[in-house]
Length: 232
Ligand code: 6PG
Image 1 (tube, rainbow, N blue to C red):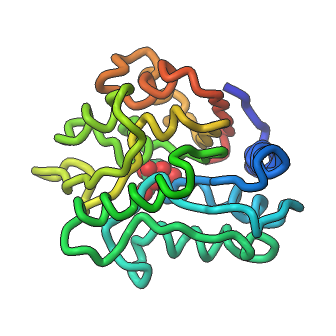
Image 2: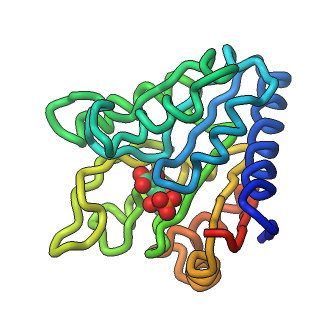
């Protein structure tokens, strides 16, 4: 875990790592796929990444998870990414949504899986956040999709996630990439802020990879960097 004295240094370090990885993928293969999280953590990182001097016209930007809502919804991660990341130089990137107004969330997940597979079925750079319950993407504890999403030897895919029962997370239907997609990545940056999340990360890292997403991510042996700052 790398620690930073303030949010600016933390956000700058995360954006620099992601930009470096995208630029290397473009140099190597002429294209790059970026997948990022929603929620509140990524915005200062997206704002800096958007200004990176790289050939954004060769980048496909997508999400690691999405709420099953249209972009007009205040809950939409697509709307967040378009508003904060896909601006300035990064507006030249092509956005690949996970949501589609398909009849069911599972149908939408199948549509997204097909679209991501058509981009090569792997990710070059990933920005993750983590909930205080230890979830990453929309891989929630106690969810019926938890174990399937964490199964390491399935093909990379996108799955529909039902809302939690009896007040459990998530509050609404979600779409989520699975752990094999994270394992396919050239680099994963997990950005955390605040003392609470540092403690959650350390607890979860020691968990069972079959049911603890952080432990599963570590067990996947993907190039993972955890960047933390106290400034919540
Ligand atoms: C989402 C995110 C989700 C997020 C965590 C942390 O759709 O909400 O993709 O996985 O990373 O919930 O959220 P915060 O960054 O807001 O704490």
